[in-house]
Image (tube, rainbow, N blue to C red):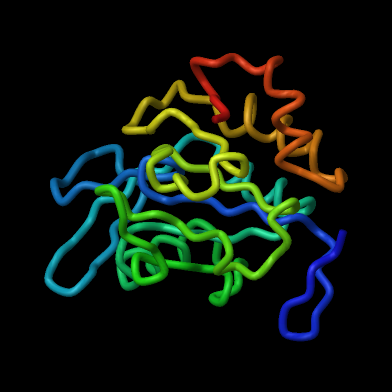
Length: 188
């Protein structure tokens, strides 16, 4: 099923990915293990990248159109996205100002990406941000620096790859998720 956006037909399903604690974590305190620094206004952030992030994004972008949707502010997030995935189009990045606010959560409205929801999957460490779209959401454990983490390549990539050609991607994932270790990846 192909969606249309600005006259362009999209043949790939859409993968919407969170940033903080899903692909990266950052701190204002300097660390020896950070991968890069990001200056936002007067603040400097030391950014750590989840193991497998670069490989995961490069590989999965052949099967999914990549979007980033973060609760963080634009200036901070743009700097990080430019570093980890400079090939993702700016119009495929949504920030805090695109979220809805309810029940104490900043909720990511997947309708904002203007794609058929049967072709949209959100990957996030906080299921509260996906309250409006639980069927479309794959939750991953929050990442805060464990260098032994292999969730992106060992768990998430094979799951997304298995569903990429399906008409209803969230349903295909839901049907195959029983094979995935629940402590590493959960689907609600």
